[in-house]
Length: 244
Ligand code: URA
Image 1 (tube, rainbow, N blue to C red):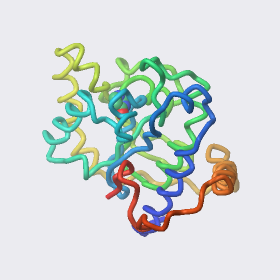
Image 2 (cartoon, rainbow, N blue to C red; image 1 turned 90 degrees about the vertical axis):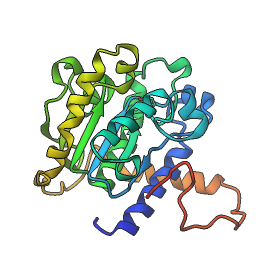
Image 3 (cartoon, rainbow, N blue to C red; image 1 turned 135 degrees about the vertical axis):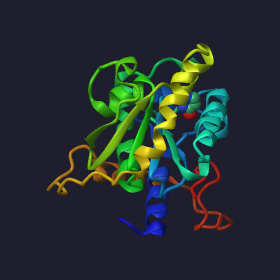
Image 4 (spheres, protein in one colour; image 1 turned 60 degrees about the vertical axis):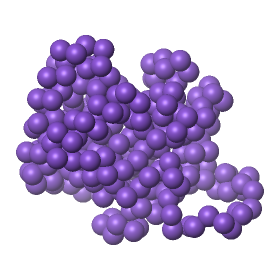
């Protein structure tokens, strides 16, 4: 898919599906909002963090707290803004008390992330910290071993340049890590200047992205949804989605 309008529309559909998700009963019962992700739907650069925290859960947008402020500063340092990139998380719902995501939760939520990757078609995916890196690499190697080393990976239906770096929150707790983070960020413009890696042939059937399953959930939601008030502009993404 190349057309920007279609891409935005398709992302809104996935957003709506995620918004009614109850695959993780505890998260669905305790969340204030589903933090789908925000930014540029046509971005070449996508960041994947861990999971929403308290502020993100309340505002419905990723990285709006202290770690997000640092992420914004790091972006500014390489001449980018949040509007140039797409930012999301492995989990779209806040784990209570910010506990670590559970393996089952990561598994439940990964369809949404893979759909985001498929639709946004970023050239570079920058994983922030251990959870995103381990999930997207499908391997338990720690971020401390991998940080700053890009590799070409096929994730679901997309082949991308994966670039694992430290989570900005790590640099908030341990200031010495800020230099490492800045150093790793400084390589991003060079990575973005490279050609996108060649894409694999579309598979007969994409096991990692069970679209019919997502579609079935949306149908069920639509059946249960109250009639639209008619006041919302259908062309405008919901504010918390913040798509550009
Ligand atoms: N940390 C994350 O991993 N994601 C957020 O959205 C905020 C903080």
